[in-house]
Length: 337
Image (cartoon, rainbow, N blue to C red):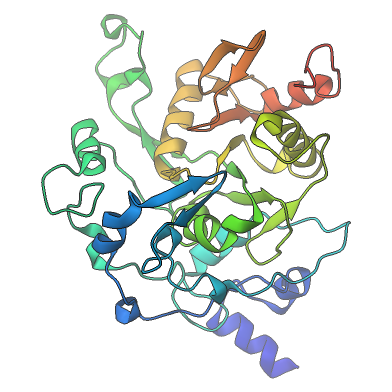
């Protein structure tokens, strides 16, 4: 009714009746559990990670006193609501929730993390000075930046191979430009929805302008979608899964974003840092990612052809994806394996 509509507009700016009619899961998140309610500490869980047995896409604990990925109650996610075969996810859902800062019930989103995670901690949960992730941040002077910022401050002439001698001092100063729009694509499995995908959702996922997981089962709350593809669902057939992902993204989201990043569910991405690099790349080249092809990632010769390494993910500009789509069904160019 009218009172409900006013409530949507006044308390939850982005959760309007119209928005919720389009996507009833906008603003949803699992029930929040108090930070101190866990029966174990992060340190103790990390200390046992070495005792976990990793299988494809999921980790199973060899000991029963700790859960996989330190997620004590994976069942909190509940069952995925059904979707019809024609369902097209809204990839801006997490971004909208991040900008709003709260879920549909007024709880903080993303949910607060334990202060313990901000302490120096090595891979086994120790207090020593071997926190390699923290060392990397400090030594490379990486600035995680703000997840909600729509601008980035770049130093475009700081790329490898640029001769500083021909650039005047004014042009070498940092400049602030609009942040490019990036869609993040994650391939995963249903078994990881309550662990890895939930972790992404509650940390860096909303920092992407668009986010969508591609899984073995659809779940509109995450959002995740299952796409049919040729061949079995296995690591050696990842190209066919990737092919179906790129075709779906090209059909439904191509012109909504400047860049498209794809990778596995074990990634931790710094979206602001990624945007800074991509913006500096096009500024340096005086180029537009909608018309100039870019591949940002690592390629190597493998198995009789070129291979995109997916461990850290890779990024295509809109123009590159357009070009890929023209040959993606040509088995002479894009081999079946």
